[in-house]
Image (cartoon, rainbow, N blue to C red; front, side, top):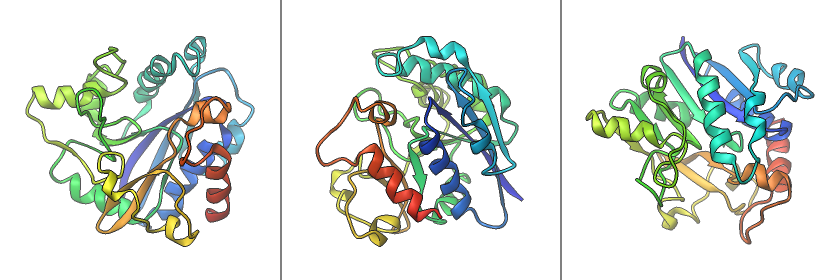
Length: 250
């Protein structure tokens, strides 16, 4: 049985977290077992049972220490605190660390994991464009032994959450990469496949590609969008993301 653990975090966001986990489950091949570590960055348990019911492999943890950080202004610090807290519960060889405003869109996501996992110890759905070109924490596979030993807290302004994973690989000559995506290559922006083709519209989200298909999408700014504190023209809204996926993932 092939396996890895998804480590994600949430902040009073049942809809996003449900979509993310259900998307993994929808496209998961029969020979896969996915474990989930969900860290709620507060003492909120109001939707814990709803998330636990999605899969018997979901484990829920509250990290109320992160709640002291503003969910917008202190997001990087809270993100790092939740990542550091959650990673102690991972028992598989590989972890997929991601935001909760993401979705798997094709079974080829798992083909990418198998192919790239043969040659790399770290590979991401995209990389940052502003700091050190690091594998971005919004969605990345990493060997658990590396995740365990590397402190992933941000060191702003030079390093954001999880950038230290890439720094570690560079300093130790360990192979890492990122897959083609519209965040790093705007020319890919208009390419649609999978869910985005089926709904017949361009929904303004970053897309990640493997073998000619969109395998992963990222809403971006999930927390501020959920609080109606962020909007950018041409980008999908929080409600739009929910509506499309809740219909598609039935």
